[in-house]
Image (cartoon, rainbow, N blue to C red; front, side):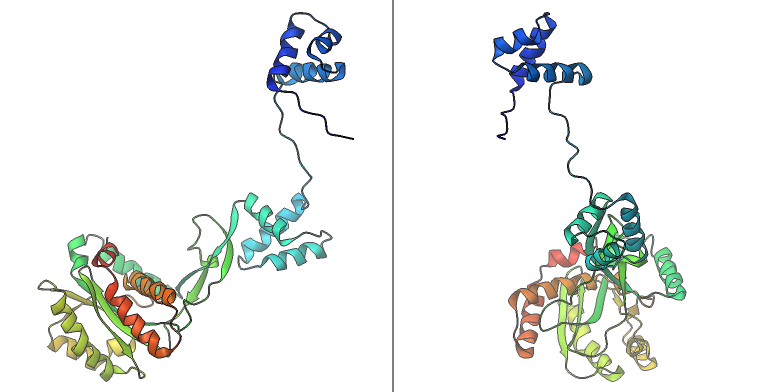
Length: 320
């Protein structure tokens, strides 16, 4: 049967107006050229809902029952890394056959979406207390104080782009909940870069070709940190930041820093996320990935070029 054409709003309004004047459904139908049954349906709708507009349709019934939705929510709440395939299999075992798209739609109606899991340091209680102590001690530091810090760190740059991500099911603004993150530890081995920066721009960047030890680290500081300080024209009393890697905290390194009269920022362990240079490393890796280096030699060359191109404004904004 062919689908009938929907009456216009004006026609529906005319039916109601004529009805209110006391005319019968038959008379209204003949006058407007509309079937009597249609006129009657419009009038009944107006009497019931006080409108002749189209009402929301219920649509097809949900494929997943309320019980099934609760089961899905319990599963992703317990383990946010559960995949859509896992949920499809769980429902199938319970007697409900659905697709992965249906799983996504169901979770989105509950305010949950699939998002990239944040990588955060693996923290023990002692680390948490140290970070809290650091925050309290520097709560009143001014922007000028942070601008006078030379930040440093090492990082690994992958040849074929940024490390892959894991996805989790979570609600908005819950990205740092422990269940929604991936704990990380300090990198070990691989192609390592050492670099430093301040609010005034990037300092030197070098490729660490051999396994770094304390002696090599002190040589890096001697040949690259101090020249970077001079190039960036750091103010008198500038502060040096590095983490608690054993090479950094070795007695010989501390003695070297003391002899050079360098003021070192006391740093809580397992806290790379507090160091703004992590955001700068991300900037560098994104820039390098765009150029798609095909070998280690090209990777090192591109890293140096892109590091030098990072604007001072990017560095300064990281400290705001």
